[in-house]
Length: 581
Image (cartoon, rainbow, N blue to C red; front, side, top):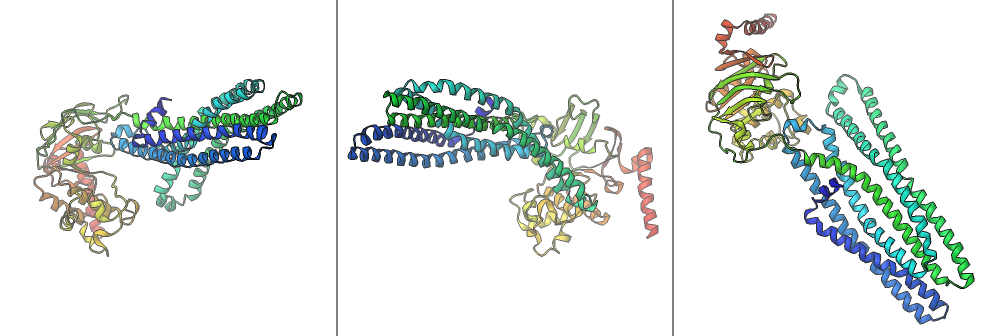
């Protein structure tokens, strides 16, 4: 229940709608409870005494009560919808904002498909639970208490039936809820797996078609879909047991009351109108118990979803700004001091160990190394995408942990190894770098990144639609647009993480020439080709998460055997290609 209390704390301005809806349900229930009393008076007084004016008078009162009950019910529906959908909107916003504040290490605690399910399906479950249970949650207990009280007032002997039926119904409800409570959590995890397969299949649809693996993907989807169907059937097979059990108990109670009540009428100790009114209260009490049981079932399911939502909201970001952060990065100096890093505390080995490196402001540094040598890991420590395990990273003369996170990341422009473009136009994507950039500034950045040569051929230029994830441009064009977007930030430190791998050598040389003119910007270039970094002021060669060698191209070529081997293999391959041509 703690999770539900936390969830409902996000009602905010919709709290008054919830209170108004609750009040209107109480009023509606009171009007409905008066109707059986009026009906009993009509039968016992009006009909028996053939008093037509009395019948009309009581009939008008019943009509007024019914009309007022309808009106309050309609008003309740309006306020309940506002409260439930308002809560859903605020929860989605809160979850999304929370996820944006996560460090990469936090995101590793949740699958992407699970986060999507928690922001959509789970919140919809809670939202529908509030909308669907508010009325029976208030109405059920009120009708139960008042119905039993009024039935005792009408005839205490017949009212004893409630002492038999109520415990039976309570036991049935307890057994059903106890059985299905853990099954709802299993059901939501099955939804997670289904979303994961769907998302993965749609994202990799080109690879699926290229390898003609459509049947395999269909089988994989069929398996998780079948698992979800099976889990859903098992869960709701038990959940629906409460309805026939309640109906059996209710009809058995009705038959018993008719039997004993009929005998009491024959004996003259009970009036027909009293029995009719009493049966109305019996039906209302039984219906209230049905409402309460449905509330428990919906609450049980929503509790599983609320627990999953709370896990996202309660996750503590592993990384945050200090209490009194520095809000200015003076320059692009970078220094690694005895830096070691591993992705999790219980990891057996460090991804980086014993890193000592000094980069001057405005310097161009190349980083080379084999696959798995932790090149990307090294540069991700600069904008504090991860925190070091040991040592410190210094930017602009200060430890990165002393900066305001936004200030630090604004000063560092990074083009990650996996290029990401968003749905929309070229212009909308470029404005991520500088929301206030005009067309001239945008074209200058595109020219420096070598993106102008294909943009000028597009009919709409900067207003060309890229499609979802940039599907309308090639890999090399996507890389150049990502570089242009980063250049628009005008960062003090520019990191290019293998971001020209899909670009031809001529275009890469053009980009390199444009970047060399940015003398006030520190440039760190991760590459696989020596030609991409051979003109750098300093080249760092990584091996197994350690700095193997550091120096200029000429120095390394003269002294380091690994660098010599890389150079010989790449340059010889280029010469042979040239000879073949």
